[in-house]
Image (cartoon, rainbow, N blue to C red; front, side):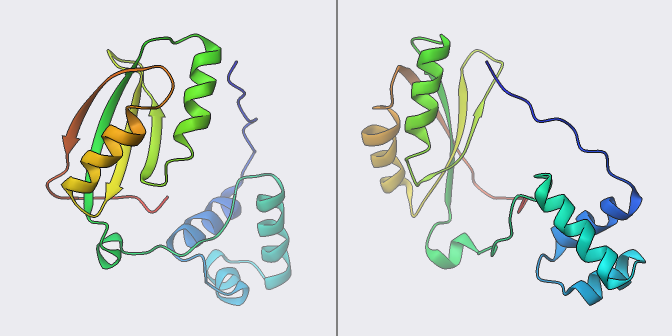
Length: 156
């Protein structure tokens, strides 16, 4: 069974803090406090509470995939042969181990999962699809859509 996290009650200061940090996670507490209209100590306490409550799950560098030679994006629809809970759990565990799979979503559709796969080129994608994705537990079929251009991409 899928576990859901309780929704955390946020006030307007918390929402402002989140907006600023989502835009620039490296902002200093002094700048953050000024932007949200609090003094530094209460601002730090709120960020600590947001971290402790799991609202903020971490900070990271956002990199340009093209500068790393990873500008080929494909979306793979995956249909499973078995969708009982044990099979889904087995698939979920295995797909997390494929580094080229950037995102994996269970979908309510004619297929079961949608994977976002990032590779250097179509040749490498073909290899990942054939050797890794198609070999995942309970995969019955796949269908691929290649992105020609990324118009908008969230950094999360």
